[in-house]
Structures are given as structure tokens and as C-alpha cells.
Image 1 (cartoon, rainbow, N blue to C red):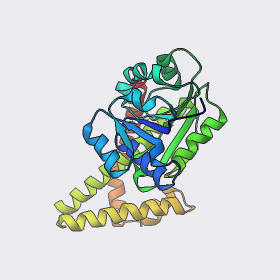
Image 2: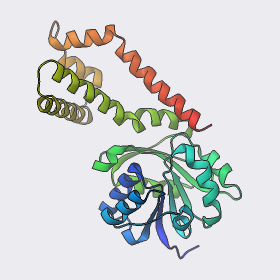
Image 3: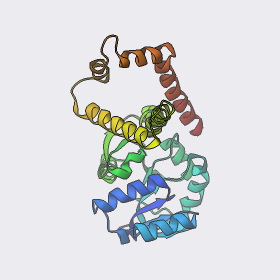
Length: 272
């Protein structure tokens, strides 16, 4: 099909879809009139229309029909039913990009049934909302190198993009897809500690946020490893050493590794 109605159909207009849409619009990758979104929530449809200038409908099939690229951003638990609904409305030659955790390209192919589908699987994270995202891509058996390049273009407007083997995607999901939540959790605890030890809520929040932002920038711009940067802050017998030693005695490092392992296991469960 050459006369596509839309360049991009977004199936599921949640926060991650919003982040992707904002990046696409900011980079002028597609005209907003050439994008359509579908969501069961009237509030999300209204948001996309009023805040982003993107037409939004309730029915997934309405959005997908005639669209050149279909972005699947529904929850993993909803994917099978969504694909069953979408299959009759997908045009020949459509490129399908899925951001659902745990759902393999082969499972999407199986759910869609007949034909060889062009599918790219992606794992983005929410910092795309501020242009600082991280995305990993892999392609299904029916997708070409050009399809992977098209998907890369979609995400690179607001993220760093890497390509991985599909067997690595569950680990990517656990490290970078869920990763921002780990940082936010750490921030919560640092703020709570500051308040409990005498700082005001505002003071503790400012100190914590700026510290994490500054440390993240050092990680991104320094040639030193995280371990080396940590050691430069940790003077022998000092306050930082006291904190690190306490974390080590409480096995915080192992707990983080095990937590990420739990996220990997859950991603695999979601994929069936």
C-alpha cells in the first residue's frame, strides 16, 4: 500500500507513548496530522488532542487501518487481545513496533497469524519525556535492516538507541526500562533520611535532586568508571566510607543485583 492515511498510529496512549510522541513532534519527524492515537481512556484521548495536537480515537482498529507504522504501547497483559483485534485492520507492508515488556517478536507474529510480519521490538524508558531516554531495539525475523533504521529514527529524537539480540531484551527491560524507578526510589530514601535527621523537606529534596543530577552527569561525561568515581569521594575514615561500609554490611549491592534479577524474571513471565 502506498497511499497511507497516517505515518504513525499509537495503540495505547499512556505515559511512554506520550514521551515518544513528544519527541517525534519536537523533531518534526511527522506532521501531527499524520499521527493518530487510540486509547480507551477519554482523559488520555483528550490529552493527546488538546496538548499534543494528535487526533485520538477509542477503537484500535480505527487508528491502525491505513497507518504505515503501528506503535504497540499497550500493557503486556493486554497485548494478545489487542493483536487479535488489530489483525484484520493491519495493511500489507505495515511496520509494527512494540514497546511491551516481555512480549517477544515471535509471540506477536503468532498472535497476528497469517503472513510474515515486519516487527521491531523496543524497550524505551520514561526519561524520553525530557529528551534523555535510553532505548534498546531488536528486530523480528520478518523485519529488515531498514525497518530497524526506521524504528531507530523514531526513538533517537529523544533517546540514545542501541541494538541488542532479542535474548537480551528482558535484561535491558530490568536495567534501563525499570531503571529510572530505582533512581527515584533511592531519591525517596535520601530525602526521607535528610528530613528525619533535621533538614526541612525542601532542603532535603533540593540537596538530593541536585546531588543525583550532578552525579549522573559525572557518570555520563567522565572517563572514570563508577567504581573509580565512588572511590574518589570515599576518603579513608571519612563520612562517605562510614555510609558505604554500612551499605556493604547490609548487603545493599547484592540486594540491588537480586532486585534486577527479579525484574528480569517478571519480564520473562509476562512473555509467557
